[in-house]
Length: 439
Ligand code: SAJ
Image (cartoon, rainbow, N blue to C red; front, side):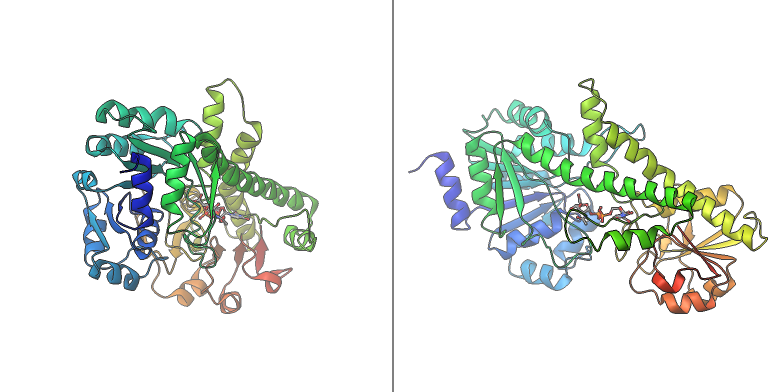
């Protein structure tokens, strides 16, 4: 009869441990599937009944996870879903993969994490592992999750249960780096917690990167996403500077990208979308403000990135002006509404901001997106135009906002009257073309 820690680690090794994943969205569902495919019996817990029923029917709602994979696991009894947290009293390990958005005030919204912890706590028992995956500021796991669990369950961390943080690294739409083969950082409340969480995740994922504490793991994620956000902000400002200098920023970036070392290519765009890159760095700057420190790089980059939709509006206005058309009353076709190519996710999409700004100027705004048939967001209520080429021909201006791979950009260039290309989707065929204005 081993210690609580030894017994739990053994359960991970022989797959007798039962796993719960709280929050089965774009992070939680792939993780649940990967744990089940590793041989664990997994239950996904989510308040969204639609998600729960879809999983239990053997279907998927996440582009990166096929229904075939889900059905095989559900049929084998390895995967199920529930909207009742009480089921977690029957599991030995729980991953928490709930959203960490921003409030309208720009402050972190930890309500999903707090709610998940408080719902889990009454069902905690001796010999459990809990891993938080939601991107958040350093200290959340130790200062929020730990007391929420200990106060209600009466259990003691590192003795009765083991708590760690492991940042998600899901890149929606990517199939080369997946949940299984992307290295996974794990940091616990204590070394024992790190050891237990590592023993669990290493049964399903190829590479685990243990770090000394949960704060290091939390900060690692914020470095990764702050790095991207700041570099995107820098290249957006480069686009603005090149515009003033009458230099083609796309040619400059492509030339710089020939440097085989010491450079990483980022490209300008109409704004910064997604629920991670625009958000996570602001968790960090918020935390630092509480320590009387101003994270100036983050705040400046955020200012530049949030100015890009209005900069894009100016480009559209100037392009129509070249054709002696006021923006007021002109029809503008937005191509691509999702926050990035080849995904069906609208969260924080710059397309929403550009549409709002165009409508405020009196433009007749229509959109097309093969992944998003309807737009019911932020007061907008639009449907993707049914006949793309007819809309391209008829619009006074086509604005390429999200460069989905499936568009035939040559055909669009041939049939449009005017194109504002914010993503260099047309490539060289759009360079110096009389019908094309590039960011
Ligand atoms: N963007 C640019 N220029 C660039 C790169 C991106 O304008 O050079 C824009 C995109 O159009 C998009 C936003 O930034 O609106 C975010 O793009 P992203 O490529 O970072 O995509 P995300 O947010 O779906 O995924 C990122 C992951 N991306 C990559 O590693 C390439 C990764 O940082 C995280 O795993 C993930 O966020 C997350 O969940 O944290």
